Length: 516
Image (cartoon, rainbow, N blue to C red; front, side):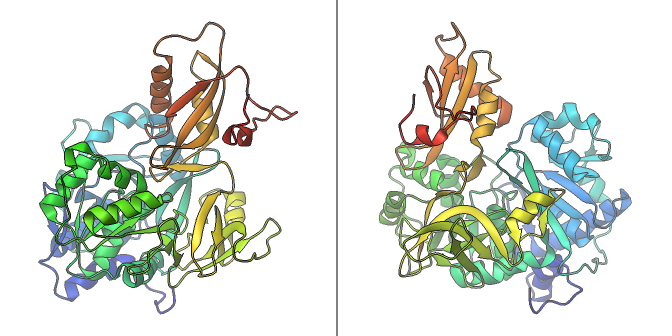
């Protein structure tokens, strides 16, 4: 990012600058149990950096985070970066085997984990030769280090490492077409880049804002919403460690009266349809809502605005680009579209030959972004296909209208998102066919009553496999194998699947209703 010196540590800009500007006593984070001021966060991040030094972790080495959204998350994330060590926040909904893969892939020396999540990884920790320490946040657990105890004796001062603006600061893992996560290496300069573009010029974020994000901190979207953006102006964030259900989010909104609410389309639709909260009206301080992760149905945006009196700024971002690069804006909302490019980002639509296309034509979206990742860890061929010089391929198909607004048309491949998380049909199919009743399976996206995409499965059963309760058994099986959000909401039993002459499943025929 232009204007940054070679010696640049993102923690200095995000955190220490707030202390220098007199916000040491201001509330930075609350998780409904604990509060953390900017001054307290600075002290604890220094303690964390000293702890990592004592544990023998060196600059540029990785520490993994499987942590719920509590005040401990920013302490670990910023403390590691302060020491020039790379934090790797991981999705808290992965399976044991997925954690084993990612922890081995990033070669984490230390794992910071919330006590409630420890049972998921306990049995595989001994299989990771690079992992030397497990530090548990929350309730103390016998046999593992306690975060509160380990930090207690550490100094509250630390000489922040003089990292480079272009030096990797943290990694985020993004799922790919095979379903296996890819580590995206993000730079120290990238956090400030998202704050000075989207947060400042689209949200207009202010020091007096109170933000609440349904998306968790381990997501690129949630990291910007709940950490980068508020800290860039000295605002306050309400963290939620629980699942973002309508009841939970409405309860937090009533308690804290946020001025910015960051959601996803599935949650907005669920909140609108929640019977227990049907009489819930507007909130006095709420001035803006945002949505990302998947396209926001027009009806959801209109119904939310009608009920709560506040627009939802629908946009699109990615793990590779760290946050939103196309967005609607206050006073310029067109529901059903992803809006226009965020200031500081340039976009192109190209055809299969790589040529720019005209308005009204569908093409693949490429983005020139100041916040683009450096590449994927140990995935050279995929890095070269995605990161092409200044341009990053999003894999999204879009159309641009004559006013410069972009509308999402679908993925360039078969991937689709459920509740803002990528789902690979192949991954769900692979899980289904490990069930003893299933011979073959094909999965496509299907829109539910709210227009949101969910997995639909077509399955060929083994002889005599049809039985009462089979559909629920299959759904539970997928949840256990690959994650609770990826299970098929609808399952249709068929005699055969449409295939090419070489045996490949023709999903497009299933999507078009020309199946079997």
